[in-house]
Image (cartoon, rainbow, N blue to C red; front, side, top):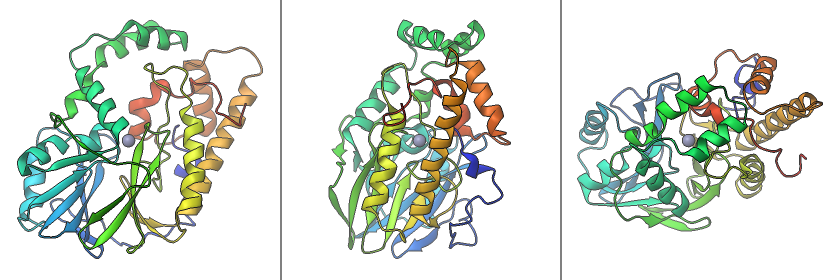
Length: 339
Ligand SMILES: [Zn+2]
């Protein structure tokens, strides 16, 4: 989905608390919980940064998420490794999900330190599949999918031109991985971390929750100021990611305490998980309501309907996540429970 109303509302984030006055500087880190460091890597576009985390793990560091593979990314990591990470080794790399701003440098880090990559199985294998699309032509299935959604030939041309491009922002993945599974418990340094899987943004997104520290590394599953993209993609045209997204909001709300410190992949760490989840769910349901209102006569899911919905939202600054993936937005059937 696109950014919800909370992105632009004056009341945005009113229930959330941001306990840190400043973000870490470029090449620096900020300790946000005992043994947990917040670092930022630069991104092109309006997102500006992705947050990555280092968790003290004996003599070294477990790294969670890795930034894009792009010119200068290795220099950014070298500065972090020599600077706030004190020249200590990386013991393992955990990646929340398959998007390039999270997995991009995982192969570089695991290669440099000879350590394992941890991901959920679906995210790892889907990422391998995406990377394998580099250099391929856009498949007829994809063209048919977007044409059926109402795209004009110019949009189809852009799809063809950009096909496979995301895989170029991912450094060669290791050929094996260790699996993160929903409910699994990992020992990292002094603490146990639980894997909490969410769906909708990607098929098997891993969040990491540490009960002792009351910290949740939420990836893109929960962001304080952006509502993450939820799209149907040509590879599974009848998928219901919005239904999965709503299910995941319910699951996270029921299984995690309200007062955890949430460490999101974009924006700033915050407290107010349940309020944010409720706001996200409300935003989705309002969008579905608008969709229902627009579906009083047959329409295609492509540009006219999408633009109508966006205009109604009066978006002032569509975020890069939305912009990058908007092609699939609003194409699906309505999610379970909303039909
Ligand atoms: Zn993502």
